[in-house]
Length: 429
Image 1 (cartoon, rainbow, N blue to C red):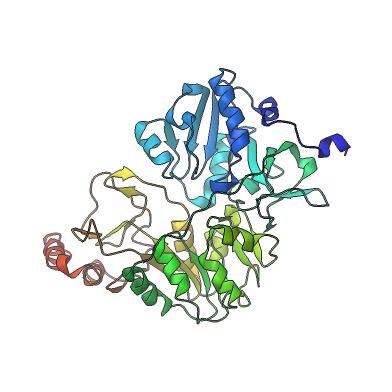
Image 2 (image 1 turned 120 degrees about the vertical axis):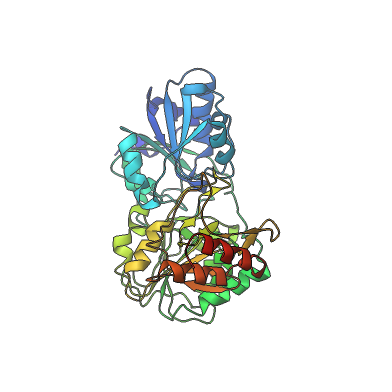
């Protein structure tokens, strides 16, 4: 290896030498996105120097002109999970969406993108010449040794461990661009969140291995677990709620089968406190989503507990977690991956959590049937426990009649009579 290989490029435009006509660019989700490199690629599209390039990414955090179709087919975005940024673009037809389970995103990208260029943020190289992909292992780390990498090195990116290391000899080039990571504060919790959290926490045994999704309710559940013992964490998202549990000694992973004593995730998103906690913390490992979200691996963990939020549940127990009002809102993410893993785990439990109503109580989120355009994320055959602020509906191995009865019991009292009438009309009661 020559000294030249070790040196960063002078400017982000160096990445353009590696972007091929009709080529594909893979970008990590959230803070793994390299802003300066994407700026350079986007400027090249604006100047007419790109032809038919496709960018593949989950959950973009930064708005960009190309997402709105500014450069036509010169530069186009394919999403694997819509964010608040890409959601309106998808509705406008300037962004495409690939349905997926998070565990399969790498294989989908690998199928669609021939000889891709992977551009990613990374922590500075260590004395051995290894970069860390920091807060986003996701699908990106699975391309190490399988794709061409160009990195944007940022001193603010925490150096994390796990299967997210890439040696300088494995990259086409790299630049320096030091800028703070985007912070996403935990959503504010309301009384109903804590009520739901208490129902769930009471059913989690000491020594369980946890996966929690994103949102106020999962955060409330993390805060409700502070008196538990010997919990493990194997989850796609590492968030601020984890920090207190590790520092209190509640999460230590000593009863885990896989990655014993380690907290395992595939990406992190939160505040600076979380990013500081992750930096050079050997208790935390970030692995690819192919590993973290694999239901076959999860099924071998004893007492694996999956906790995910949904938008509505019908009388059969089907969960619509990615559409709202018949329009796409996000995507499947890892919800089904973890629900299936919990289903086959010895002592496993799968919790689906939601408030009983929306629109200030006027709309029940327990519904008889889904409307036109609503997409089922978690199937009736996989769902286990549905939790609202009014209790827990146990659905596993239950009949349709028993399911409808249990779900109406956890619906808001103002809607129960109407739901009961509709259940009878459908022949469910």
